[in-house]
Length: 131
Image (cartoon, rainbow, N blue to C red):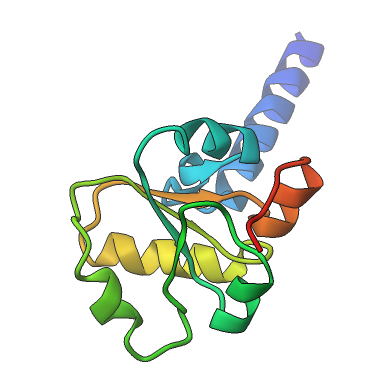
């Protein structure tokens, strides 16, 4: 009986820890892998590169548009997009795109997806960029 109680306590502890260490708002479900995004690119999607124009020129995903998150007009530019359409965002490694995804959700975009690991992970996965 003692073993069962210890096992249940351990299970409870691990479950609690994993839930509390997550992002909490369900943001993990909005991450897409390079493979998942590659399949989506076969459709007509809204794909936003939130890096600087200089970074965009060095290489970007096919059919993406550059809307720099650091630019003062970021909200104004993304505000022109259809909030009911799925939007995919990416940056170099995921930090800026996570922030952009949060802003888009706050602005009322219904479906926002963030490329896990950014363009660096995209290239690491063997996917090509446009230069």
